[in-house]
Length: 133
Image (cartoon, rainbow, N blue to C red; front, side):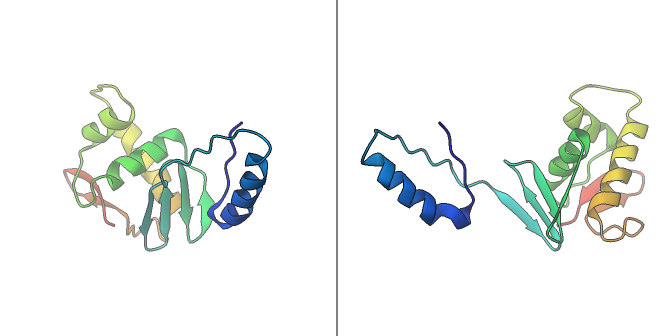
């Protein structure tokens, strides 16, 4: 059996496990803490693949999440549309432009406080996109 619990439930779970350990053989496994990235108004829980804006969970598609985490992995670095496409879509393409533009547009609508004046995902004219953290 595998049990998962929130940090706030740790004491109760530890007490239950210690009581059970007296009766049956238990192997307790605690995974490494999961990395969480915090930016003003934005939280990304990497191992859980969850994103929160101002505390509210945002549902992202696989491509939106992949694009966000790709950009977040190197804040301030400018990536071309081709670099983003090849990294997130895992394929080469000569016509990736509209795919990346559409995903960035949808991602901004979901994570930015004002998608018309983005603070997180910036466009670098003539080059590509970067994440401002």
